[in-house]
Amino acid sequence: MKIGIFVSGRQSSEGGGYTITEELLTTLINEIIYKKINYKFFFLVSNDFNHLIIKKLKKADIKYNHIKENNFFKKIIIFITHYFPKSNLFLNFFNIIKINNIFKSADCNKILFISSEYRELLNIPYIATVWDMQHETHPFFSEVSSYGKKLYRKTVNNNFIKHATKVIVGTKIGKSEIIKYSKFNKKFIILPHPVSKIFLNKKKKIIKKKRKYFFYPANFWEHKNHKNLLKGFEIFLKKNKNFQLILSGEKENNYSKVIDFIKELKIENKIKIVGHVSVNHLISLYDNCHAVIYASYSGPENLPPIEALARRKKIINSNYPGAKEQLKNFPIYFNPKSPKDIANSMQKSLNKKLKIKKRKINELLKSKSSKIYIENLIKELTAI
Image (cartoon, rainbow, N blue to C red):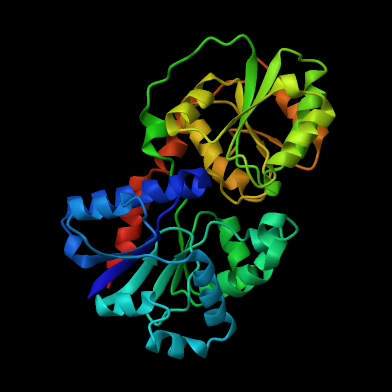
């Protein structure tokens, strides 16, 4: 019998979802090679159009199957399987939904969804990975509620989690949210988000800047709270005119509204938007900023604050549920609903007595390595 791994190809523009999936997948494949257990695994890969995942699997001599799926049609079918559970028998028989049949034909007796993905109901025991329950905790944001997204996620995500054999989650807060909203009552595997090796190992290159800047790395989704951040920064500028705010992220979603609001506040000359950037450029922006600010309304975990810690930067962080469990007392915390509190936190970051506790940061980061994550995961997967 084999262990099935399901993973979909992702785009770097997705942000943290791409970063964590890439890191975990690479580490898992390397660990399989090191332990010489490739015969125990079978990968089912969806929509890996650039063949980045497939190349790694071929090199590692791990068996796999690659399927190409139309995302719109796929979502309709997945919704039907959860909304009308009896349809599964028909859809499986005619191979309209494929992954259950493919894993069965590969003789898999358990399946891992290594990334946070929600698929059709399966007849084979599976482990689900859940990064957040934002559609329940923050249902008022357009990215989780518009165009039927709320109904889809409540139906598909919650039901997929409920029927899992085990659930991987990063925090105790995340665990409590899953229990509350999905009624899942089986085994949890708590594995915190790992930080990618490149953020730990790349050598710093400091560039002299005329103006100090705060850096906010986040796509322009509504829940990322750019509006209150900009209001807070405007207040901060009244006493600190020689500062800039740099924003990175794909120029879509709520981007045009953010641009309009910057113009409304008349702080265009204090804001720089660099769009989606490469990992090397991202690290340079971390290394050369005065502090990283993370204004999101939701967690329970986020990657940028951990990446900032790996680069030994000051962090000013929203106090969303789960933040202190993930980041301990390293950041300066603020209320994400209060621009005044954001401004005050920026002001606190100027205190020269504020020291970066490198030894304690190292201890925290050791517990968040992808190697530890994957070693613990393989123990769960190979347990009898």
